[in-house]
Length: 115
Image (cartoon, rainbow, N blue to C red; front, side, top):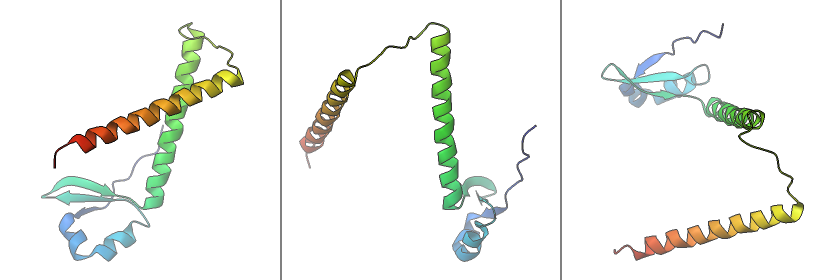
């Protein structure tokens, strides 16, 4: 079946205020569930663990996207087309110009707000 997740150590937020070094040292072994008034308030994880989680999510999102594209091709919802290098460069220039135009529009909107 899958891995069984162990319950992380629970710690009141007040403990983090009183003994931050102890809490941060504990992050080298496991994540810490912070509580406030007896209820879960947040989870602390070591930055390397957080980065691994984000990388895994990125990989999973890419896999889902690829599988959805394969399904669309298999069911006829999409089709493959051949794109020339010239057409690809035109598309990139158009996308860059649109992004630049949007950035200028946002700046104008921000500048137009009265102080």
